[in-house]
Length: 190
Length: 155
Image 1: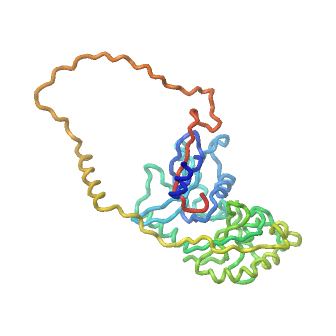
Image 2 (image 1 turned 135 degrees about the horizontal axis):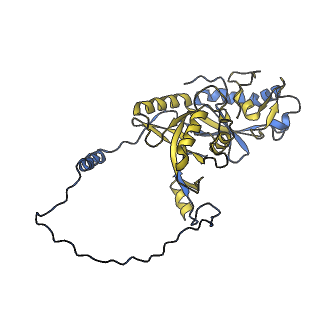
Image 3 (image 1 turned 180 degrees about the vertical axis):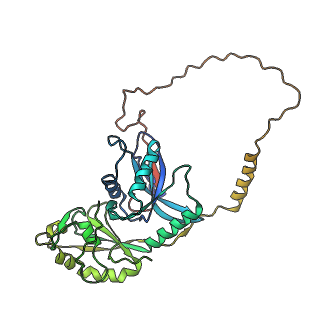
């Protein structure tokens, strides 16, 4: 019955990632995209070399979800990050390190900026408006379609020039102009 | 609009695992559709010999394309405005918050209250045993659920 009601009113219901304590919003990821497969991104974040929790035996639990980033009566869809209340600050610090905008290998090769939205540290409305403007300017108007017949995107493929890249990197490196570029852009799915 | 040198912006696995989802700028729609015909041959040209089985599920079938199934408008949307009556009510309430209400008194001192002995109620309050651990992590078997509005295929 609940399932039917949720479906009728376009809600979803899922098990909270932490069954031990409440989750709290810690920030948003500027330049994130509604088309990103969040489960895959989550796995890439956890496996990133910069993801070094204080207690590796009990790492912080976080979740990625879509929500509206609001500034000065405007809004845009972004991926938000929530974490366990007791580890909110620690998780925010890890995300700050991971998504700081510096040139490096980002999780899944997507450069995103972490905007901390911790309780008591809300950024100013002007700053949020800047974030919103840059985010929408970068994302633009997008369309998506599906391609069938590819292997798993993490599969490593050897190229004629001797280098080995993931299938995802290979597809992402296809240039907009006709003719295949010999250089593969190093946006590896770290 | 940012200038992008690549054909696709995002390359993501679809939940089903059967197809790959790719995104591109709406303005490049025609160009991307033209490239569909040559995409497979371009990939084949750059991969080393014998690597076809790492790229394609079936080397003979190659790849096929689905239609546009999602579109994202890149416009900044106006957030829902709070109506005037709600704003006025908020102001009205905030006035009360600035000056807390005073206790009313008739000026006549009240007699001291009689001492009433109330027995301590004996309610049963279950205390979670530290040894007991629910398989899903909560002591009483209550699951923490997250409910949100469906906005995307990836929830």
